[in-house]
Image (cartoon, rainbow, N blue to C red; front, side):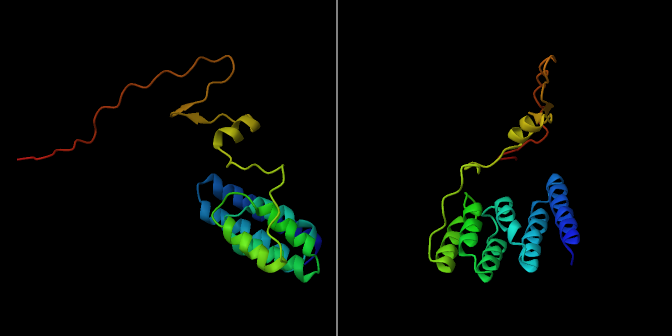
Length: 166
């Protein structure tokens, strides 16, 4: 596989992951993201290991360990530590990845770099950075110069719970 093909496959997988996440298909998006890591591991692209680990985070442990093992197989223990550091942020598998880092490299994972956020990203944060209007309370967010949204009338009881019906 040529470098151009690898770059194309990587771009397609990242795009697919973003589209799936946009359709609220989180599991399928994570599979596509993991495939990027396995692509880099299989092709030995040492220059992309840390970036892939940073995008994956600590929610998936198997692709991160595959990336670290790829670096170790190339004799790059320092790169394996960078991979674990890039993924070292709050997530489902953070503790397990720390134990695997210690097992594989002999050191605990370095702390996450300052460029990584320690809190999860929220929709409003992304929308504000990208100037994308998002919905707040069922209404579109007001833009500069527009009037605030009208309050909704209270919902009428659609579901009635009858206790002790005779």
